[in-house]
Image 1 (spheres, helix red, strand yellow):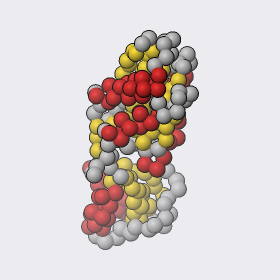
Image 2 (tube, rainbow, N blue to C red):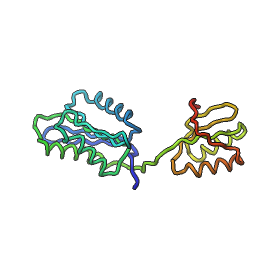
Image 3 (cartoon, rainbow, N blue to C red):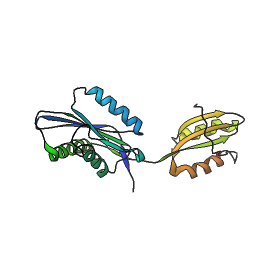
Image 4 (cartoon, one colour):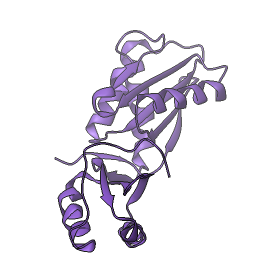
Length: 202
């Protein structure tokens, strides 16, 4: 079953009984990137009462009620992300308390509605697993292979120059076998695929 991420960040704001709920959902590569985005949100909203969030990112998922009663904020946000089959997405809701308590049920509804409202306008893209393939070439083959990488709209992740050239190519995991065949054909069988990764970037 495919999973999706967001094509671009989305935001929405709702007001419930004088409390403001500002929701933001955005694509992130991993937990470190998500924590950096949460730091940015907190800087943008220094007067906020709570910044509650949920992250779906493979094995790096997490959530926080940030001082709200347990289970009333992070989990509802996470459930909305799951409902939309999202992965690689951080969803956060900034709350400015308006002086009227909402109760546990009211909080769950408020956080759910805030992030669901933001996601109504979201454009989803299928999340495709990526891999890095290292190919070892003779020097005369390098220009031809670099041109082929550009034409295929793959990303050159790194290069190393020794007795032969090693190029690291970032590509969808499902394309790896076809790319190996194509590179062998392109170099008349001279391309090799060592398991070691180059450490220096191009």
